[in-house]
Length: 104
Image 1 (cartoon, rainbow, N blue to C red):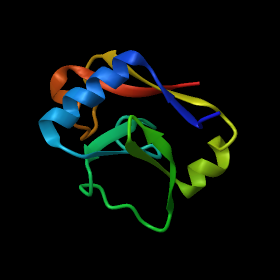
Image 2: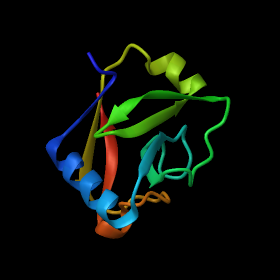
Image 3: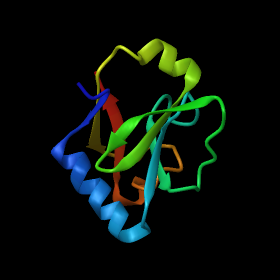
Image 4: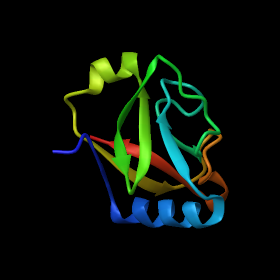
């Protein structure tokens, strides 16, 4: 089983963002800004470091998480979803009036 699944609504938003911004990447924040939320950036806009691991891909978009958080969540299936409302992060979907979130 994939470590991260994606809902149909999240797929639609990812496609919309891809058309608008080009290649994308996700990083699951470790408590910054809006709590622990998945943030979507243009590929390469967020610096991935030695403390990050790639959890998988969603719709061909790499999804990263910190190594510390991975130690906690590595055996827990995650579902990337979208909900209405503005988050407090720098994620690309915010101007659309939606935000990504993880469901377990």
